[in-house]
Length: 228
Image 1 (cartoon, helix red, strand yellow):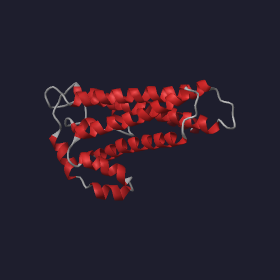
Image 2 (image 1 turned 90 degrees about the horizontal axis):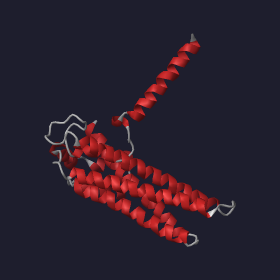
Image 3 (image 1 turned 120 degrees about the vertical axis):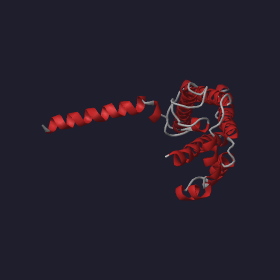
């Protein structure tokens, strides 16, 4: 009987895990979450604003895609750094370096394209004024102190959300992705010329990844605090 109970419990856990992965409403929990909520009420496919019924689910898909590609890019870059770190003690082929770097670039380009699509879609429908009002009266300073958030990154976010400037936020996200790409392209030039990238550009690229992710994550945290 105990074995049957354990087997049943494991099955339920697996089913729930698969459901959470496949269910769009529970996917992409790390960054860009609920960005679509600034464009229409409800944050679901059931909306009351005429013309937005198909737009919001599309925007949500773009956030999922952009966040997913961003994380794949960051993972590929971390693997690239791992190869750099291990290169002094291991014989590592040039193709391994290139493959990871190219993956980081390819996925970041896709992340930018997906978020650009989101921004374009957002421009075609009105903003959700109630959500904008909530963002403008939100107590950002209390929230930052409570959770010990990175102050420079959070203050940058506050400057946009605190003024209800969603378009400005979207532009800042794309600028962050562009900044990462610019550094990755610089590293690519060195690698393709069989040169070791300067350690400074590797450090700054890592920093830019982290700051870009925190910027998007903090937006999700603020939206989550307001919505739930």
